[in-house]
Length: 314
Length: 273
Image (cartoon, rainbow over all chains, first blue to last red; front, top):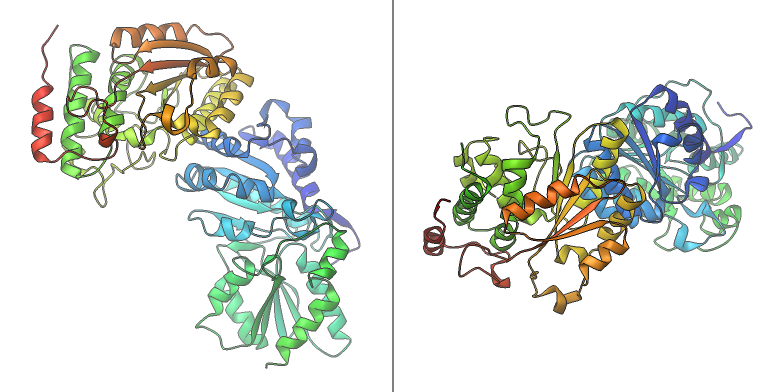
């Protein structure tokens, strides 16, 4: 399933938007002075007449997007995840989700792999914020193929969507044209001892950890939960029961993100050993993405060790 | 229903506002009554809207950025037959189409859900931009409170509208000099409002917000604007038309009881012209 190519999901986002520019004359793209970084600039290059820079004013950008959507437009509004979901949270709540308007929020530079910019710029609570809002769909692509599919699906879907993107180049896991299903988890590696539910960049890390453990005779299943809301509860329960143990893995606070969403599904429905692996309720800091992953225990070696800790409880 | 003019329409709006607030036992009379004459002119005289086809694409839009004044908007919509007049008595009740703040999906004739201050003017900017891009001949109207301009988002929107030359956007500022905690000058002064809006690149007109002729003339002048959004600063009186509510911050968010409503209605009668 994997090949050696690496592409950041933000790059795939910009490219997918640029592709859609010709196909969808109803599409508007907004940014808050970060189009070079979120890659929405790729849309601006081919379709400047439907690109709207709101300047460094995220709250206004989201409510302007809502106004555009109320006139029948499909709007993608991009910025860093920490700002667009944090600064503009209440605009997303009251002007987008409450009236169910057709606005797609794209938050790039999510998680700690933002790297050197440090803790102020590393979104670790965006999934928690976005999934707590009624009417919101929350999508976290693991690679470029998934991102392209999600941008196209989100553009075709009528309603609010949050798309979580990363800065760091991520391995391409799925072949071009792979047929995903909206709201359905993907098994990216079969295994029988434990299932790791991961999202975003962490799907690749989970695969690396699974490979390390395979050498020790431990069989790890890796599932890509790219749709965090609505959550594929049946899939989560089925995989957990089949493997008899489960762990979540995310580049997000263990409070409120994928781990919490899966825990909410398992609570009362499964007695299997379970653990949440992610950022342990602390802010990030400056450093290279690789150094940060290791520091916060999200590198393949540490993840493999944590998987063994869960297995020890079986 | 037919009315002689916007003044008679406004008078009936005021009566309906008092009646619906008394029936609901909660809501915001002060800011509804100060905004009544502006909304009366828009919905009786100016806006291209059709009660039989409330979603027609080329209609003018109205965004009540100070969403708590929605009783005034409900009164105007009911008097224009967007929904039955007696439905006004369902204001704020469970299951009602008339929510405590505007809901674009529940109430026919409402163009944007608002209520969180500062967001409506941004949404109006988005509407005006879409209308310009599509070449729609419609005008986007927005109504803000003076206290509302303490929200930073208002000024983000002000920059946006001027930058994108949204001359199809006409905003009113209901300058009634009272917010919940008192006079804005004492709470967090947004003054001088006229100079601020001019500095942000808007054409500014200043009128008496209870003089329907001045309101009409200002809209006419605003429609001539080229390349600039227009802010019409309307001097108003909070609680206008009901003697014991006028200029009283205490009537911001408290509904009249039956006795007070009766007294208020007795003050609101058509004297003709």
